[in-house]
Image (cartoon, rainbow, N blue to C red):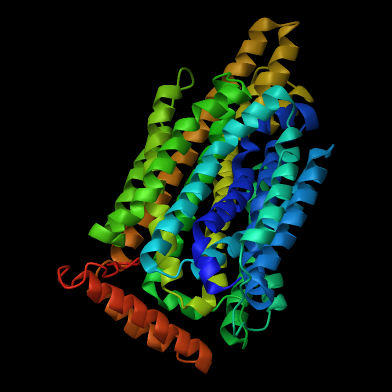
Length: 562
C-alpha cells in the first residue's frame, strides 16, 4: 500500500482501529455486571472476583511494553492480527470455564491478545495521520471509543446475561474478532520502526513478577490480614523486583522502557494523569456493579442501561477536548477535567443504602465529563513528546498506564472496601449467632450474604434473615464510601501534578525541546535525527499558530500543547 493509498484510506483505517479498541476495552468492564451471576454460578468469593477482573488487566498491562516493542521490530499490523487470534481463542475458552480458576486463566490469556492489539492501534494511527491537527482529532476519536466502550461494557453485559447467560459475554467476541481480522488484513498498512531496538525479555519478566507480587498482596490482604507474613513478603519481593526492573532498564543497552523518557514533564505528567483517572474509574465500576445489583436490586440489564449516560457523555465530551486544547492549552483542559472527575467520584462516595441511583447518576456523569477532557489531550501529550520512531513504545506506555491504573483501582479500592466489609460483617453476624458455612459465605461477598445466605435463612427465621441482609448492606455501603473517597483523593493528586508540571504554552514547549536534547543524548544517529525532525515540526506548528492568518490561511494548527 503506497503513501497515497494510506492517506486516502486513513479515516476508514481509523474505523478498523477503533473497532479493535472497542472489543478489547469492552472486556475491561463487560464482566462487571456479571459479578453476582459468577457468585451464584461459580461460587466465587470477593478475592476471586478481583482476580477474575484483574487477571485480564494485569497481564494486559504487564505485557504492553514488550508487545509494543515486538510490533515496532517485526510489524505492527502482524502483531495486531496475532493478538486478535489469541484474544478470540481465549474468549471461547472463557465462555466454557466451569471454575473461578479456569475463568481467571482464560482472562489472563485474553490479556496476552489484548496486549498485542492495543499498542498497534495507536502506533499505526500515529503513522497513518501525519498532519498534527488531524492526528489530534483522530486520537480524540480513539480516546472516545476507548473510554466509552468501557462504559458500554455493563450495558452489553447486562443484555447478554438477560438473553443468555454470563458465558455469552465472552462468546460474543468471537464473530467480532473474525470480522476485524479480515478488515485489518485488507485496510491497514504495514508499519514497523526503521531502527527498532532489540527486545528486552529479562526486563519484561521482572516487570510481570513485580506487578503480580504487589497485586497479589493487595487483593489477598483483606482475607488473610495486612500484617500477614505472606502479604508482607509478597509486597517486599514485588517492590524489590520492580526496583530491580528500574535498575536494569537504566543500565541495559536495549531497555523495554527507556526510563529517560520520564525526564520529559509532558510525558510523565500525562502518563500519571491517565493512570490515576483510570484507577478511579475501574475501581468505581467494580464497586458500583455490586451496589446496583445487590443493594438496589437491579437486574444486570437494568444496571447496564442505567450506566449508559456515562458512556454517552464521554463519547460527546472526548472528541471536543482536542479543540479546547487548541484554544486554551493542555494544562487547563486536563487539570480542570481531573477536578471535575474528582468531584464526581466524591459524589458517588455519598450514595445511600436505598434509592441511591439519582446521586450515583450525578456522580458518574461528572466523572465521564472529566475523563472525556483528560483522555485525548493526555494521550496526545504522550505521543507528541516522543519521536515517530518510538511510536510503538509511546503507544504501549500510554496503554500500560490505563491498564495498570485500572488493575490497581480494582485491587486497591476493592481491598479497601473488603477491609471494612469483611471484619465488620464477621463480628456482627457472629454476635447474632450465625455460624459456618453461612457465616463464611456472607463474609466472602455481599452477594453471597444478600442473595444466598439471607434467602436460605428466611425459610426458618425471617427476622434473622433480615438482620443478615441489613448488616451486609450497611457494611458494604460503608466500605464503598471509604473506597470512593480514596479514589477522589487520588484524582485530586493527579490534578495537582498536572497543574504543577504539565507544559501548556509555547514557552513551555521550547523548554521541553531543550530538555529533550539532554534526555536523548545517547540515542543512535537515526533516532536522534528523528527527534530533531519531530521537534522541528512541532515548533513550526507552534510558530504557525501565532502567525497572521491573512498571510496563509492554510497555516497548520499544532496538535500538541500550546
